[in-house]
Image (cartoon, rainbow, N blue to C red; front, side, top):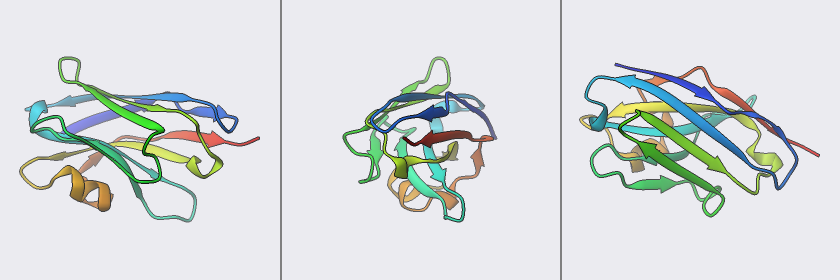
Length: 129
């Protein structure tokens, strides 16, 4: 199994930036898809981004394309999410999550983040004037 710890959340004004970090521990780390999903109060989980364990391919939700960038450091078992041009609708708790490549793919995880088997405690991101 995977243990994940997110950090880097905070409060910013619209147009601002934040960089989220996810520190992970995992057996056979290269065989896990690692991604981010978010959840606002009263809303369901929304997949944000995902990087594939197989070949490192990256995927983004349409709502964040061009603004967010995911990166993965396999040596340090760390994943980052650089968020630029933040909007009020980005406000949510952001979770780092993992799923074995044996059971799913990043496109599926992005569409249905409830497929993830492991996730962290979450970090709050608030975007307001």
